[in-house]
Length: 126
Length: 326
Image 1 (cartoon, rainbow over the protein chains, first blue to last red):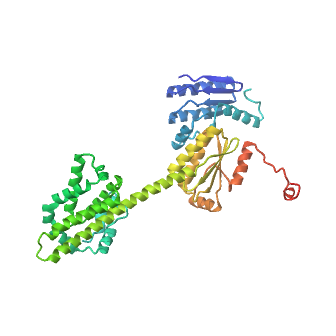
Image 2: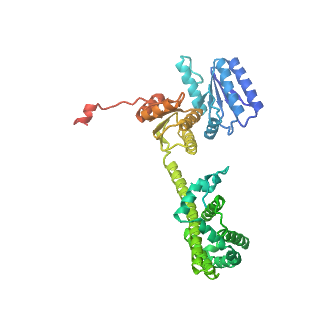
């Protein structure tokens, strides 16, 4: 399943629509990193609200996206992790170090905005 | 018949061992009952009588048992009844065969556990033993021992052994009742003591009271995560004033809870670390890592308010508060 990547001002929103295979994840990773470079984006929100399973490969991919985009100068927020997924991730030791996390998409965007304000940059989004 | 402690050293813990009925304990009980090697020898004299009479005793036993409505429920069909009868015969016969070794003890404990599991009332259990003794006594006294005292002595030896068996079975009853009560108690403590309180918009308060074990930590974390979602919380204050001890296991649970909350986009402040707990944690080398901790709940709430951008101010000066113009 293709993950649509939406551009909203200075940030990109990757909105996951359903269960993803490993190939889908890798494709999303590649596409996101390219878009960050192409659009010179300052932040990325990956919305995982619909995911009801997060395996170690998915968690690792999210983590590497966070690290890669940081190298390109953008912050990553993982938004909308479900309560039971959060619990099982922690128990499996998949803590997503390096990525910020938020309750949902709205909070994720707000988080990137406030981080930008702190740095004295212009506000993302609208 | 002294039992050597090594006889009990099986690879797996037996039921009896789990209940603390060791070889030494069995020996002690036998001493209390004054059960001597002579008793064992006397009981063995009973074997031929038992051999001949066991069937009629067991038949009479179950006839009496089944005359009670509530007992019939334990024997849904003939196959079960036959199986139980066979077991009962084997047991009664076993009483007269000597060598009351750890296997014998384990068997008694196991039978007690089974009776407890099927909820057989203890009074029935005792009444049935009494019935059996009365039946057997008839046969012993009519067996025609040369010396009439001999029959009495045999009967008394049997009584001793049966009292030992009863004590074992009753212990099993008590043990499993206690276990049930403990489990119920823990369950209710668990339910009582993990409230998640919305304190301000975006702030949750989670006071933890009592012991944290893996199951409770999991329950608590689940509850917290669901509440984070429901209340759209940004900051959580976990107050552990009511947690008596913090060892590495508890610390590990706390770290997991904090990590899970972070994945949901919430920050956690842990409050209520007393000087004693701080000392233990340092002594044990426990590191809570990047978790923000404060001494008491007040500090915790103040810090959480700062994180959320609240500023709480007094609107009345202290001296006015005491004065007339309140």
